[in-house]
Length: 368
Image 1 (cartoon, rainbow, N blue to C red):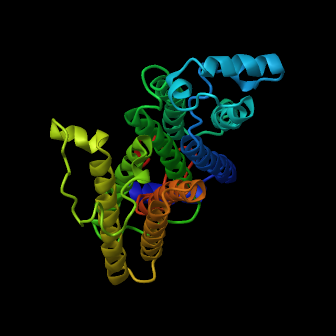
Image 2: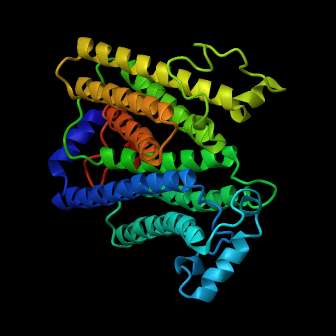
Image 3: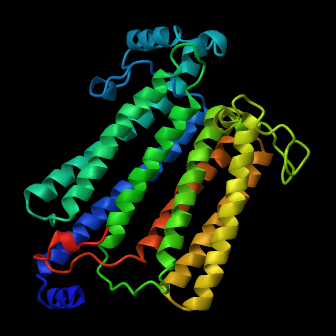
């Protein structure tokens, strides 16, 4: 019955609907590009230890950087009051401070830019009737995630202003995973607005398996955030052995043991490695199964594309580790993580049904 309704809807769909959907899709893909950029800039901010250089949260006034010698002196004086300067960077010159300041300012400026790039077109599309009913809650949810991310960003920075010389790894990983959710949500909705027909999933288990892989990618990104937050990539820089063994002897050494999953350098890096191996194996088996069950289909091709990106990311991760995380390789690895996520989204979204084809179709019938 629903299939017949969609077929009739497709026959009577107004041409303006597809134009609107194309415009919305292009806008969301632009947002995705901006999120990729901020993830990379955020990684540079972390690798250069720049994240604490701006010690105040000024959502509006903070758009304008220091413009005079007095304003630079004021910002530097504020930085000198926090533990990172007093314990690590004491004696830093103003020129050196400006370098780390510009990284953090660029990160915050890009975050504000993304807010504008998302909010203004969103309001325009809504006000001019270009958004179908089923899109409104989805896009409103993404906007809410963006607002939450702004608060989480400051919550993260605040953790390093008192009693610490860096930010909390818990908060950094949370900040990274929310950025990943925003990217995934934008890409998921954008992929759903493609005009071409979607073949059904090869088997009833294809979608659950794809969603499981997607969950594993999110977990690996979160673990990567913990590794970055602890600077765990700067130690145990051998592969495939770690601390001289395939399975190090001192895992889960903290009390209680669960804390080691979040706070112990050895355990956190080991779990990150093991999850990478698991993701590699699962995506390989999934690609082989897709090739066997549905050869020559989009599902099979995107399954192999997903495995290829996981393989490339694993190789980049190994090189990054062995070289002790140089900035260029560290940023490439961070970019690779969200690129794997993007490919996983494209692959899994292809297994879902289409959005309603008619402008009058009920949003209740719209798949996710």
